[in-house]
Length: 150
Image (cartoon, rainbow, N blue to C red):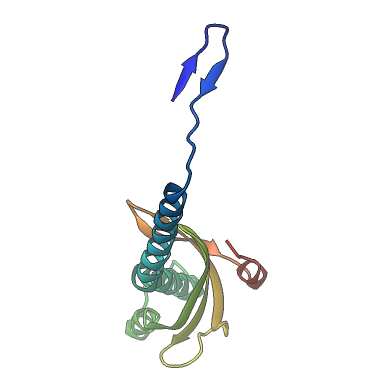
């Protein structure tokens, strides 16, 4: 709340907490922080996992299509390979960051083995929106993951 004092300056109202009000405020702030952290971890495990799996599957399909070229129509063996490229398992997913902006470390396997490119451990940057849920912004680095504290 602000009030104009007439000379162009704006005075802000101040709030003073004393005694039990400080303790109540700190308890409410701590509960809010714990609830946000717990909620974020739960949604990251389900929706975030699916967002990363879709990203890696589409990336794999893009590479498969690029290797076959755009001129020739794929035969049945190539189509089977393309469909198998969606068979991606996320064995482990851990995230670091605060709130809606995270860097995640993902251990990936395809068809029960390592991915064709040999990169089974990958890092991604995820953001969360109330409208779109978890979205992958792109790949990240191990350095960014391990130096991310908040």
